[in-house]
Length: 338
Image (tube, rainbow, N blue to C red; front, side, top):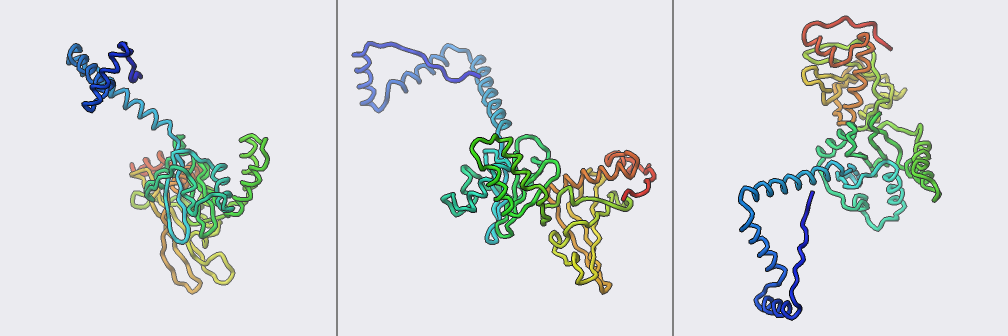
């Protein structure tokens, strides 16, 4: 791509001084006048057809340059909660887990001269909740553009980050701060060594959090049931359901329990937006509830559904099995895999 190029002209100094004096008195300058004259020469001698082609080429190169710049841009997305208020923003600089954990520790230690966590990121741009969810989805797609997606809750003291393999990973904020200190202690460590230290400190410390269901939360039992162009999966609740759904079943104080279901829309090939929850109470009453899934949760749930479907059907993936069901050619399921 070519840009502006200079053209050297020579004029005896006395003559140039006189010309600049006259032009200045009339509110002009030599460079502006000469630029205009050069454009006049271009229009006078270059045919219209050539000028059109040249303009199209310049515009094409400009658009191509913008596209390359956009493709090379790396961003990070943040949802920050504090004092009951939510803020969504993104940064044009790609912050990964290691750097974000380090910056969180600095903020908690009040090493930043700002009262706002978002303001500690230079050039942050506020976005909507939907835009944040879209960036989370792009992070899960691993396009390379979104290098980090984080949900940082100062009210709950929780730190959540999207892992492209497992979805959300949530930790207590204090554990993240301690891991960042351990990872960044010492000046001679390589970046790889710092990553290793960080992950070692966080290993085994994941917690269950609403809005951050991950691959470890999605396991299934029973048959896959076809119903109204959807496939229904029964999800095992071998995790802290109370922390996610606001129930009170993970206790010996009552006999309450829940049944949890997820649906796959065979027509669209997508996980449905909500999980269905049936709360069975000890007194025999039931209550129907729902849980709205975000982009990362849908992606890891879809992967888990596909894996379970292959186990249940002797190797048939979810897309193929759905197509056969839609065509009325449902193959018999094998015995449920527990």
